[in-house]
Image (tube, rainbow over all chains, first blue to last red; front, side):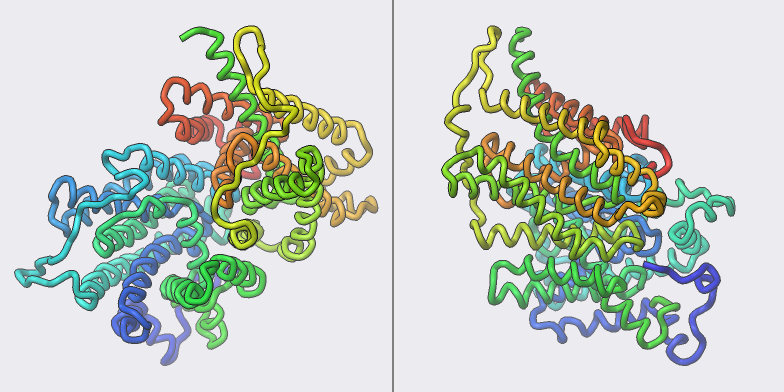
Length: 332
Length: 291
């Protein structure tokens, strides 16, 4: 994947109508998500796009923008879900506080895994993150008194929530969608702030040329660790949303197949673009939905399509589209 | 707890480790030569087990399965290199990893379509059923056979790499492929052969593991994680590292299983984390390329 040169990186988005419009990428993305439930065949699918979109967006910070191919993102997705469920079901924490606690704890987990894995480079990093995430999987499997082991975590249900004194029926799919969309919006705003900050420029510099970034005086190791934690935090928020949505946490969420699915989604949509993760999550989930209608073996098609994307369309659907209409440099 | 029990468990660990060594060796040789980490390695291990089982029932003899499955699957591996992976040389090092990851989806689902999702028992060859009296305890004959066979394969590989002309080309190609091309070696053919060898070793590991655990489409996913751990501990690209780390992991798993069974799967990851904190490049790895 050849990236733009450092000169292009520093360039402002192309002036003119389209470029100006794309400055408001968070608002535009929220607008698209707001009408999504009426574009997709089912509300349940829309909720899943929202959840996986947030998870993949967090992962994109690590893979797309910093160039670190991790195969362990499921650890944070799963940690967010498990911590939320345990906080609500076991300790009776109010749902909103549970989400905050879960994100905080997952970020701590990301710090621990990050300290070990960011010491390695290149392909090693992928293998180490995979192995450490599997460690989390087996710990969750063994600690069944906390996590429910193989059966997954059950026994917490959020059926109604109060928002500023207003009681909202959370079982209604439309209500649920818009409450979760508020979380997604928050995550997008946060991610956009990171990318627009000087730190956002530093991580892109590390991707383009690690040695040059180091020579410029940036602390590459610390930046990698920080971005690993931020990425884990955002992905864990997706896990919290999943727990609130499903009211159970399946153990499989922690398996590296889930990490692989996140990698697939980001590549299908387009790594290193702001809205690409949502496009990727939507296309993957729609593909799964459509193909599994006529064969249980949908994975063979998804795998083959993914292989073709790696070979011929490495920028993904959204990335290729943006290049085609000439706003690729802005990467909205 | 008496000593003989620990020694028997140590032997079990070596048998377990022997399969890991063979599997991880395939991964590490391919990386050392081609700079490619084959994510489908676990899936090919699983396909090797199925091929061994199928060929054994077709010919009526385990030994034909053991011989033919690695050759056949190795040839299939060469096809994969030729058709898919070859296109990615010169692109980002992540791309072959991503491609083989997608491929593993296709392979696993393909096996589910052909053989079904349920596990199939892999019968132990009749000559190797039962246990052998070692004086201090009884040890399964089959596991002893696995240890001996892996030792023979390792010796043969070592001789081929160190003492033959082809081995010389392979070692030189790992150091500097450009110079090899200048000297008139068709490096593409060497890479093709090495990828086939790596995949063949995965298949051999699969056939050997078959009688020790049941054969199912998901068996590759655990093996892949194990092989990753072994190569990371040993140092990616290092053959000695794969052997030492494979035995280390096998022995630690079976010794921990004796004292704290619930920790057995966790111990190898902990081992890896400790090694990484002390030596990020692995025990026998070379600094620079990966750490």
